[in-house]
Length: 477
Image (cartoon, rainbow, N blue to C red; front, side):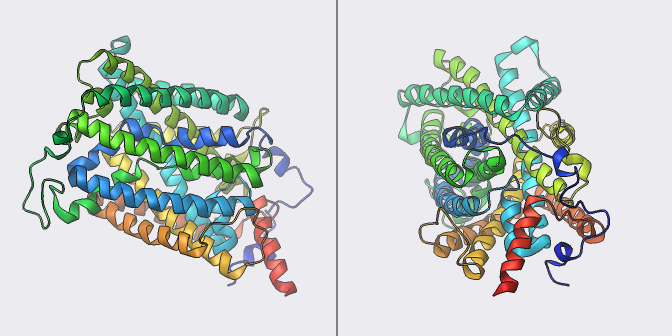
């Protein structure tokens, strides 16, 4: 069967242009410019500066995590440059799924969208556990049991998203700005406590290549990769806002590249200063490393409060991301179409609520590190498929309009592809249970597509129309 068969032969249940199917599934256009998109990109990730990355110190020590962070930062720069090109050529709410649908057909598109959905549905659950740790450390409202916090943040922030994308993105931008100010406050404070000896205070093991710099040897570098990803995880979600952006062909590439530039700076500052101020050994198991790195100083409390804003920013924005990914997959018929119906404010109600309920239930495990690794597995798998999509489209459709072109072309995205494959393997090395759990969920989604949804794709959806246009152009050659 041709990969484009669902487009050329639609079943009776598929929506046809002219009916009210798409009228009930519309997002509000023109909401965001490039600056707001840059803020969205930073917002997705900024919680990774406040918590999560530090568990990599227990896997590779400072040296192992630092080397892993350099490699992963290079991968993300290449990934972002590739996605900037793809988003300028195919601006739709599906993001990576839209790109893969055009390049790899419905199977590849759905596989990519599923991997992204796994990432974005699980990441907020991990962040919720970190929010709980910060709230408890502040003794806010006398809360000592995190599940009340998890419930509150899911309920409050889903409600804000239901009020409209424009309002939600503006709230997100303000919270993100506060979080970045917190990182500056932390950096200035940590400089006064920095001790280079703290970077290497983990005793070397007997592993191959072990030293003060690499206490867990060469294998520690590989094991630290999933945690290095936490410094940048979800920045690739910026293209999901394409249908709600003014002039997306121009603004989405500018926004995602600007966001990546900021995140590289925050990654270096946080990794070096937190470890140097608090010590690699002490920071390796901390739920709020930036606060603990500052000890009992007055600035620690300030950073604790602002750090909570950073976690909230990422939690808030990734809710936006999972809803748009689910919306796009549902609108095209890959998942139940009821999930893409939008309310009066043009926001997808069920696409916000359903993953929120699942994420809340996952957060009740309290296993932030486990959930983090599950999210990383989904992310890394999606990166592999997205970079393959860029390479395929460059080779197969060289004349496709691309307002922005990736410097270095397929060499750039080829590098990102190789590192992404290594990252997928690394998730099994660090936490086999987490990786296999995600692989099982992924298999269930693919089985659903194989036996049901591939026979009910919606030809009128933007992503399917992109693919149909490609097919038509190919037939004319």
